[in-house]
Image 1 (cartoon, helix red, strand yellow):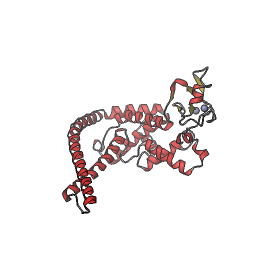
Image 2: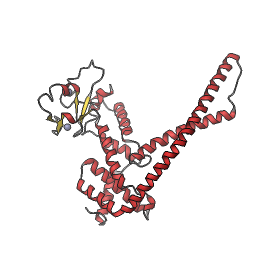
Image 3: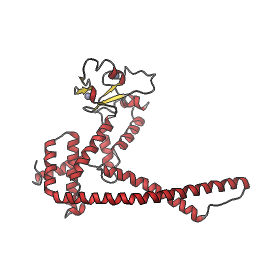
Image 4: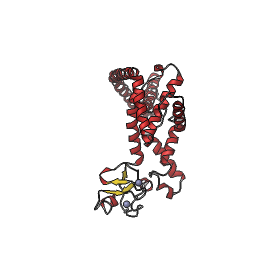
Length: 299
Ligand SMILES: [Zn+2]
Ligand SMILES: [Zn+2]
């Protein structure tokens, strides 16, 4: 049902959909984000041509390049790829700089490059700046890469020990839960109140709390590895949030437009990310502008 509301075929406005089918497959153009339903895809649209202009925006749609993913997913993957490339160079930490301000300028510049590459704006400037930064900080960047590699190696070693500890803990938890179930059975059958030993109970609570914390940390680590700052919700989580919000608050007709490029989707996602501590695009580009004015960066 969700799929019905969030996809719109650019060729038939969903008129070719067979509503008796339980699922519809839409393919998305990575070029513009507009979609083709499976009936149009296999049917009339690409019968004689491999490339047709998108009916909504006119950009070329190549049959071979249509993806089985949503526009949000494609954008998310693109951003992660760009972020990894940029953060290979923008990898310096606070103690690589004299002042907090220098460090923040550096980080904002990195975010600005990500944004410009993401949106295909001033690409030449983005590439030149990336090269300048790499040349300017080369020894520090390489030192930081070595530190990260070393950290990863130690992390992998620690991971082995950690897995062993988790396995033992899980066994203990299962044992305690089994014991508790047995006690409850006894309680029901005999009508007596039996308590799991105090020490055992607090141990179980401790294991459960630690498991929860570990899950949260793992999520955060995954976000950081993809190049996001701490505390930033992931792009695709934002998309789900937004879609859910949209379905609750918007009339049906609006929902049909969700995954097209012109609607407010991507901006809304960006806003969600900013609220969660992500890049403030306006502040970042203003800052970049100031740096250019100050002669610190080539325009
Ligand atoms: Zn169609
Ligand atoms: Zn289009």
